[in-house]
Length: 80
Image (tube, rainbow, N blue to C red; front, side):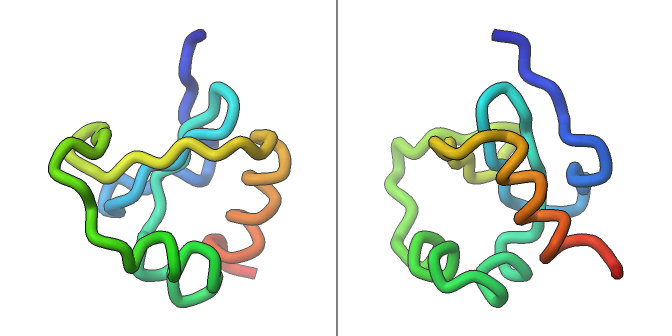
């Protein structure tokens, strides 16, 4: 499966990479944790030494559709 970066939701200066289907999102973990209790809980857990990383960032695979993750992240991570 070829992975693609989400247009408008890949921020080079951010430190969390999320994959949904074949789409990659790079967003601020602190910003996301402050706006989502689910991500706050998930990101507050200690990162295991052998945790998967991509480009030096923590990497999370979600079972959700890329369309749903895009809608969620656009709501929280882009200016209105």
